[in-house]
Length: 301
Image (cartoon, rainbow, N blue to C red):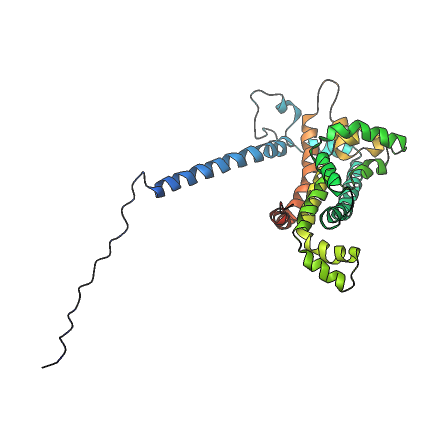
């Protein structure tokens, strides 16, 4: 006989399954919230896309269809006459070149000077630094219309009215670019900069070799925002240009497509499409860098 008792087999314990879900359970509530969120997002998408769809479809409508009640979305008579008259009635290459020169110069200036100012406000110590930062933030919150008359008086005193420098110089270092780059540079560890100084690097070398490469995503965001703002600018170029050969594209379009008693809606829609397409192409090509730039720009400091 064995000295040890025979081991008895223990029957398996049944595992209870998950309780049945009811309509009032958290899973049902979460699904309802998700559906509501998607519905809200779709509604927001429709509100954003609808004006652009109206603009694009309207550019193929004849003028009488714009005056019809109720209005129609799809053109009953498709026509390219609006685009033909846009290129025939306007000196389109001249106005397009003016807009391109101004927008490119303003964007390039912001990509160079705004990071310099942001670096100084983030990593350098000097008297009046906090006051200068408050001044930049106040300028950022100031509406553009408040500076229109002072800028015109200043440009007139410098004999820069109706010139490219008059359209470009006041916007070479925008407060938004200074703020964005400052916020990014605040996140750089000071130990890294001190190590570069010990190795013999100068302040400009540190900024150019360390700061600027790390700021690439933010600079991409600044590029598209600045180019978009300058390309679509209307009020300031309207007051600063006095001769048609200096008109930018928005000013020329509003001037020649708007009459005393009636506007040429089809031509306005066609011109708006032409204005939007270059910016849309740039945005699509740089979307990844723009998103990364917004995500990496901290709020420290």
